[in-house]
Length: 335
Image (cartoon, rainbow, N blue to C red; front, side, top):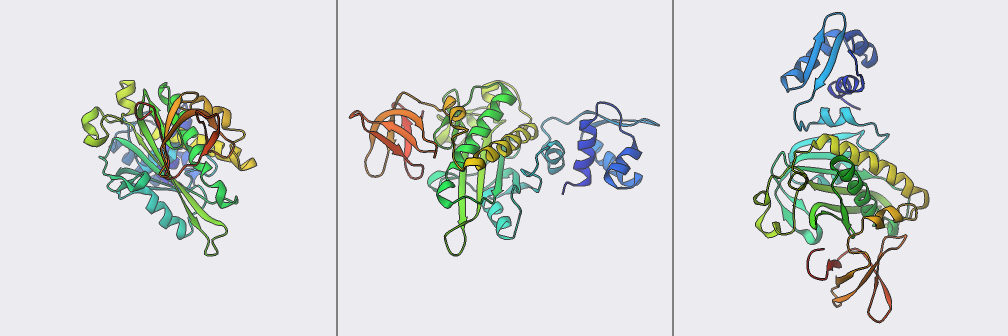
């Protein structure tokens, strides 16, 4: 359930006119005093709210890039994604947090959000620490009914949702570097890590967690660790303006909810494949496949309906590349 603060913010945000104190009381089932206290707190946090006797309250302006549970929850219009919202100012990593809440019974769509991560983790266990105020970090708990072999496709579903949400919010052209990175102008802005927990019998998925990290308001290369400065960027660097993180997260969760429900109809990427491939970096160009069994080159021919990357070798043979410990690179660099 949303808090009174987020409910009041949602009511004010959805109205173009004044909302009376009595309307807020009736809609939310709280007292006039409770409404007044929340309005006072919101004003202290920087929300510009007009209070006019006999007319009520009107939200004029939100503080720049306010990022809190109340702000995020007040924006959501989803059915399940983010409706159980858990927010941390700082945490080690949202994926382990989400797994812990899932093990304790957190429902489908539970979303763990953090302003700052101190022990983020990517592919091959790489870790990093991130500053507050610069990024979006969140993990969604998913309780699917499909078979375990379908789980890896959720990474691609999330990648599509995030790429399209960023494009809609910023106007930036986003590409997907198969399977789980989003790039802008050839540099990484998003990483995605999906993890699975099985039932004790190891025959069904107990839950999945899909974690996302978005580089949003880093102001320059110096904001990134030295080892990734050549390959990482942020939405602010690329767009030249600060991005409202709560508004962007709202769009991402709404798109993921819709795309997940499309995926769930067939438990395949058949209905999402065309959209995904339209953003696939390196399609119909030569790529290097870094396979522990042996590196090779070929032409990327898109994805299958089950999420593998089809690579056509020089011999004419088409190999299906599975996500995991295999990496795919452009012939001369990251993309």
